[in-house]
Length: 280
Ligand code: FE2
Image 1 (cartoon, rainbow, N blue to C red):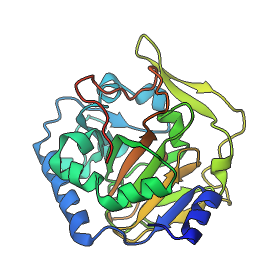
Image 2: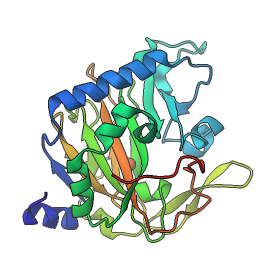
Image 3: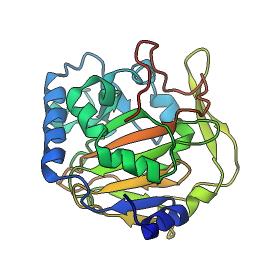
Image 4: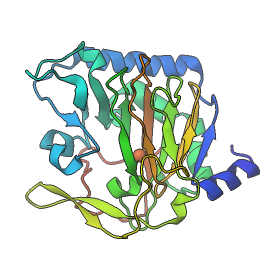
């Protein structure tokens, strides 16, 4: 589905923004479904998602979410006494990580034919849908995601992870759009996030080259009108800012891996045997 110019841009930059690929009604249907799931969520487990201190905040609720539909809170959602500062539906950071296989609305959205075509254009011969995240980037408290490479968290040998990031609402610099380092996918994988046998987590260093700082002038903002899709190479350094605006920035991402690539048992995301990965 991509033109030769678009493919060349993806090869050169490690990302490609395709504006308004997904119709507005499809985006609205996914947003409505996410709202229903949050309404039905009774938070007996409170798990916070933070990328600034990830080995500390990662808990078993997160580590066993690879085959589940779970809800993670914004770090700034809570008052000092532990109560929510705002309603539940404005407190959730994200839903993850298997709704693409467990929820019919997410399944249909995740397997849209144009996404399969994009995966093929990105060079994946037999892509599997490994992970999905519905990301809220809530007004005022939406947390930043620090610079990272997706292959750190979704590692295969060789590296094959490829992201499809869909703006369900307009993503701007003000409400926390993606930022990426053009050409950064041609640098090595800096580190791997691994789970030890005792279920603690750590980063295993692979390459000493630093990731860009948050204010590195080489980073470019990927402002994306609703319905736009960003294709992301698994080695591309990228981040997103905090949302201090009063507008949410809902996005949905699916991460794909090549079926033939080796998937290590110490990756954090593991699927239960009764829920094998599926393709498009
Ligand atoms: Fe990422």
